[in-house]
Length: 310
Ligand code: CP
Image (cartoon, rainbow, N blue to C red):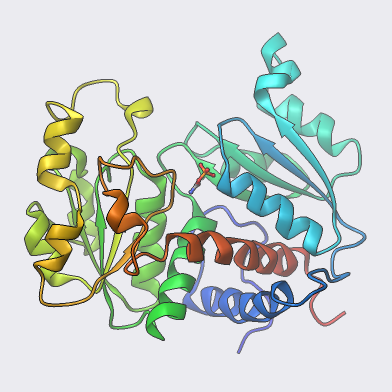
């Protein structure tokens, strides 16, 4: 097995090889053991300084990266655009170059613009991790999602995973499609046709518009939020109607002759895409996904820092 990633930055799953994903999973397995010990900290990155640079709101990704960095003994600084000199007109590049001037080694970037992490990787001298760029990619989310499927079902290869909901505005969907296909899962998307981009057919993804048929097909349902904040036009008549046709509830799951694993990257719009009795049921691994996010991000940071074998 390879002992190093084939990439210098983590910009997207598209750039990763299957072997990179396997290496990240095997490294995360070890860090998960660390996280379950009374002392949850290792000295691996104690000479590394990491800036979490967030231009968009986040709860899970930001806290998860910060915890992962602290568990690895890195020095951590947090930047939030809402309380920064971006408000005075400073550019992304000037902002990051000023942060790097303070001897920062790695940048975790969340930005609303597609390609922002790629732009930084081309223009600054630091390791860049994409924590979500607009509607494009959210690679660590896809890694923790696939890792959680592997943990729950024993493997990802050969499993049928359907991604439900607002595929058009989702960075989680595209990263999940790339990750799941690379490691051998079959992937379907399901939602209203207005929220399914036409190019998905070219990626070898199955497309289904009927919720029940999609649920009958899949082993795992990864349910996405309707991203009203990114929707500039109306893609469906009302949230009530969306919920009627695409909301997953306990009655529907109970009517299937099989068990399905329910996932959601968060934040959940309870009562819209998922009812509370499903989100909080034994079908759901939503909080396991969050727990696994710390181990996955530790693995990514550790491997990108190039500390293994030293
Ligand atoms: N899943 C996810 O990216 O959540 P946050 O927006 O809270 O980070």
